[in-house]
Image (cartoon, rainbow over all chains, first blue to last red; front, side, top):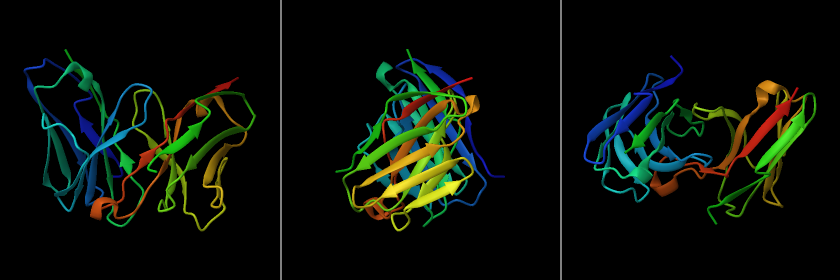
Length: 112
Length: 116
């Protein structure tokens, strides 16, 4: 299995909702990443997990809460989001010490 | 210092032509330079990557040229095809960013259209 999967593909939520994005990989990668990508912009790093521990938080608002329950799974919990948080949320993974990052297809999030 | 500047913003090339996209960086600590291809509604896919100890790397129709002294690198797509129409992002990375795994700093992207 050489891919990163993300669910759901699309998500529409209100500003008071709580939802979660899920990312899964079975390549044995021990580094996992969340990126946010606005339309016609490059991906922007949000979080990095190394060996299931949060190693980088790029000053992301607390309404985004990442979780890495095991080495294959990465979640992003969403609460009280704003319309400007609408974007494509990308998950990626890589082997530790190896630079190549493999991206999932993303979750298209719309906040109403 | 952490920026990667990419040009052009958009590019139209005839089928069979050469597509050239350029990137420049300032931070000499960057030591890994990948190019990603992204189709609409999809995640970025790694196309080709280079390290600063190499001046050129070729994989099929795709070539990276790297100029360490000028702090510039470019992607050349030979014999461009309509299926190459996508957005291309250059990126740069520093291992052990923040004391952990390397991150990716992306350029702003180039939308390539290859006309039949």
